[in-house]
Amino acid sequence: MNPNFLSSSSFLLVLLSALLVFDELPQCQSFFDGYTSCSNNFSCGPKITNIDFPFWGGEARPPGCGHPDLKLNCESGKPTISIKGVKYNVLELRQETHDLKIARADFSDGICKPKIRNTDLDLKLFDFAPLPESTDITLFYNCSSDAEYIPGGVKFKCGDDEDGLIPLVPEAGNEVCNSSVTVRVPLGKFKDFDWSGSSTTIVEEALKEGFHVKYKVDFRACDECRGSKGVCGNDLSSNQTTCYCQNDKAPVGIRRTCPLGSVSESEGPPQQAGNFDPSFVYLRISALVLNFENRTWYCLLYVCFLLVYLLFVLTVNIS
Image (cartoon, rainbow, N blue to C red; front, top):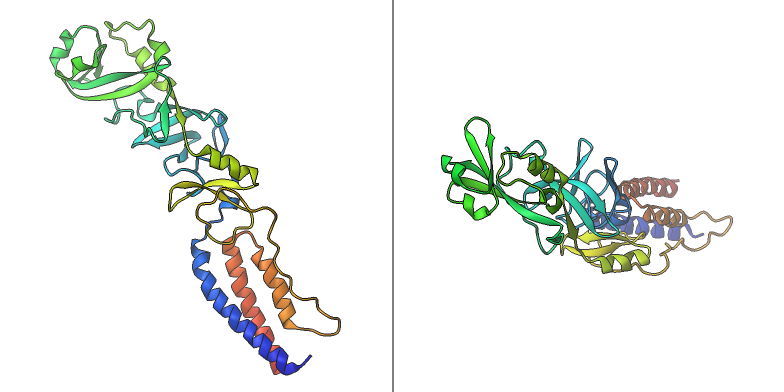
């Protein structure tokens, strides 16, 4: 092989590689390997296991794997989710029916320390279970002594100084109490409830039992993605369902399916026996590096390889 040609071609390859590295470094920092990351499932506790799209959270599923408002947390082995500023314990999650059973975490230890915020849902993302299965009740706090004269209401105390009221007719508490919280509870608990009594046991049990909601996202797009061997995720810039594919090397935006087949990197021209060309080694190793799935390690490996190759070429040319 012509030494001058070898030297010039090697120099051009090194120069081109340096330009490519500087072009790749910003992507190394920002690229999200959705296929690998979102293939992991979320698990917390004995009941909530192997949860995937549209949920994300924990160490296993980073942002981009699910809807931004469907983040699951695992707190001391207990799964939780926050909806419109209120934290709920996740009691059941049935992905086949898109059903979620939740209970307000602030009522886990009784009814006296709630977050003064109603049980509201983002109706674009959730639907309440039908009303025959659940209903709303309103708990009033900081009530005056006049609450004693309201008929059809359960009176309770929080400490020595604060009186509470759970009226049969919610409007009755507005004039005698300073704050209130409306919560969803299972209706079955109140079939035999004594609204004129003073026991809050059934109310506390109902709050802990929780209620069902249906979550709704673009499941059709996810089904199409899975049918093409992709992994469902959420495009953070547009907040829409997207599809991550195994051979992704850069951000893809919104995509519904993965392309058929796999992309194979060029391995370069065959090397003839007796002729050693560093360019051939470069092309072969570059193909392996570009196929590396973890983008961070890919970038480090690519830079290290380029430096080693540059030193090798300089050594060959000097000798």
